[in-house]
Amino acid sequence: MLDKVPAIKMLPEPPPRQVMLLHAQEKRLVDALSDHLIPIVLFALATGLRMSNITGFLWEM
Image (cartoon, rainbow, N blue to C red):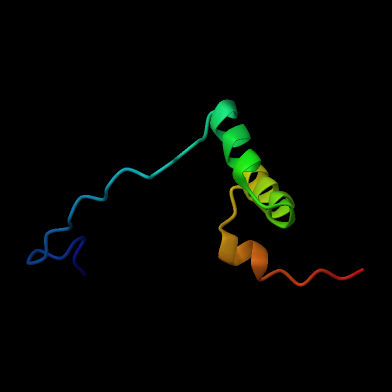
């Protein structure tokens, strides 16, 4: 059994992208939003989830 594939060289992976907004940037973003979008965006900022994940949730009461 081989430890590695000799004919295929692995490409280096780019460093992970981590974008964090400053508090002032978050405030400007929220101030520019329509009222109905504010809770969704605040939830996204707090959790780091993508909008597609958030809007796909099924909320049960």
